[in-house]
Image (cartoon, rainbow, N blue to C red):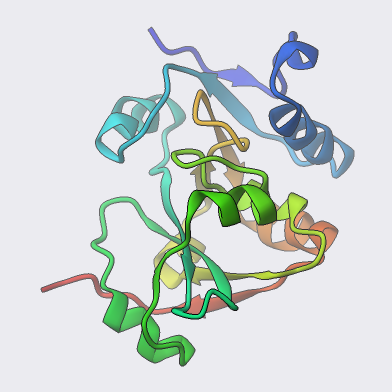
Length: 182
């Protein structure tokens, strides 16, 4: 059974440093959040039960790059929406988008595959990664994401992420309109 908690785990010091840093930053910014701990989630399908506990759809977070691997993007979109590379490429003026490799993910976001999250932007001190958010995500009162590991999930107010978390990391975002239909 998955349980919903308020805030950081009591054993945060025993968690991976990247996860503990997430809680430290959220707490320092006075951003309230709900948290649940669970088995590793590697697919959006595995997130369905977690979504129900959190009462929010966990965002699909895709770490992308251009062909030359000189520009990196973190795309947040609803988990149930299909990703169409061509649709996004046209909006951001970057052809040949692909998934960035695990080394770049670790280097820029201090996150491993399966754990990609907006929270990783706190580790992008050089501001290499451009955040792209689908407009449907911005319309929701809450959003769900991982605290830089895929064995816990968070529920945060979208407004707190946009107005408090992003400024604290020095990142802004670009709104994109994704239809995701064939």
